[in-house]
Length: 476
Image 1 (cartoon, rainbow, N blue to C red):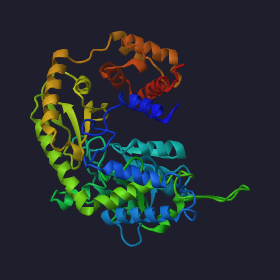
Image 2: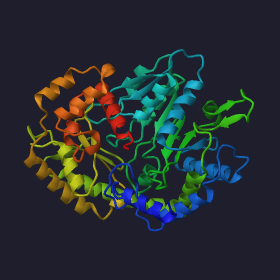
Image 3: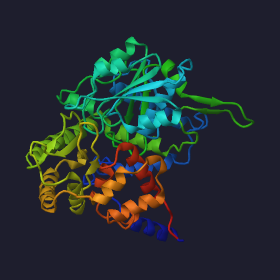
Image 4: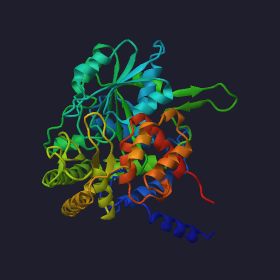
């Protein structure tokens, strides 16, 4: 195919995607709204895309850029002179490496554990699954959604190799009491990781702007590592993240080396071996271009947007914000002070999609009911009135539609399913009972989200694996 035809087909495919700019997709993407930033990043990416981070001696430019990025992150996040780090492909890799480093540093521990607040990102459960570690989940305060320091401390035992807290937690946007938890971990000689993937590059600027941001970074005694994603509020292209360690001795167990074959000795600082230098160069270019003043300005914009949206959502009849978010993330629920709000949030999400906005549905878990997640970025500044007007309209439409009602035979079928024995045929039957033609033909998600919400977490995971399998099946 001619090159231009290939690009035309790609452009046609992209028309079905959620918008990545303009602030209408309030999850997954982070838009600074700055003109020319994408072009700068793309040019920097192209300049280094053919290089390979597998061997820093072959491409010293990559080594220089990575050290520059780590130094910038350490300076922003309370790192001292001894702080070291690595640039990874994203938050999940950073979190998994933090777990791996803690586990590998304690070969004397049989059946190691990682202690997590129940609001910790699922990446830590993924790490526990991959690395054969027991994840000990500690419930959070049911009203504030903050980690409970006393309960976290009580969960630490002789098999614990890592304790994890969030700054902020993704679901509710609250910053865990890091000093108290880190102190408890330190008293037991256990590492403490702060997942600041989504907040690490914006909370320090909020503090500089006068916001009361709790202590959370590497300056807190007992914090041994911290993750921060550059493709979030540093507004760099995906995927780049930084994993920081308080000192080199803590990072050493993160590295992998193998000379047990006749080829080159494999030596890796991250989970990847071959790594394109493109994302690294793009991040380096964006960080240097925006600089401290640029990030402060962007933080001011997103802070203004968060304040406006938080106030405006609270004024919409039937909605409220969960907890007391201290960052850029909002969790919106149907107001439970009303006996029957007359709608469900999953329908509100569908109505917002029809109005050109994407709000991310989140299922009920512990004391957190089904809710809508909003990731607010600098590009939302200025469009708050339009979003709030459409949200009020969406709530009215959802109230007219009424809550999603699942057929009794469907809820009964869900209740009788065994996750370990679920078949593709049973999954197809559930879709049929829900009146859905198939996973690939869904336009509105309220019904399937209600179906998934009715399933306990273990079954929901299994149902979604089937859903994923249907989506990732090529058509001939």
